[in-house]
Image (cartoon, rainbow, N blue to C red; front, side):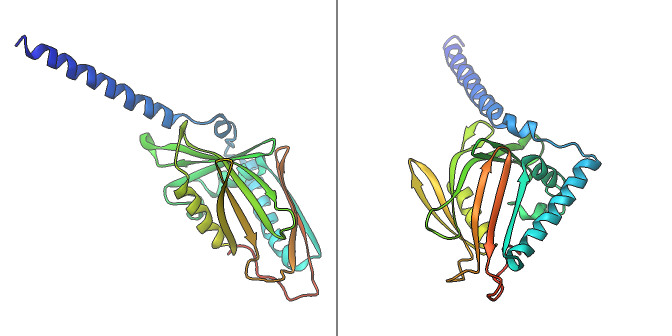
Length: 233
């Protein structure tokens, strides 16, 4: 019995350490980033009205890209969060557009950084997966946007990027956007090429800015040419 006691003590210590590690990892996974918590929208009439307005403006912008000589739109982070709250909650009408198991996306714009987070899973096993991005138009490359992945985490834990990058590329190609990934200073950077099926696209994106809590996009279309293919489904 006395010989067993040191072994039992050792097993107990190992068990406590393992429990501590698992508990620590669980706490890190369950931790919500501050931007995600602050971006929550109340489920009231104002949120629903803003969400409906955003949807109308997105549809109008897609039409303008095809039919107007000059077009553009500005969306604030607050407006986008209202749109997400109404349409991309777990039971939202557009929730199917998100990867399986993901819902409740929220965004924040801090300087030139765009943070996007979503809840993955449900109940005790849910965590917030979030990504921090920088985006800009590539000089001398018409309709090419560069997107740098600055950070990618589940809660506070850094996670691998490849699966997420593949998912982003697949979603973009479904909207007629080609994506090529490379690395710069250790960070993944994606080159997103709009209208890739058009050698001389009629529409050109001239402005893409993420700043001051807003996303600004604008461009021109040669309306004397055949209408370009629409972006998105």
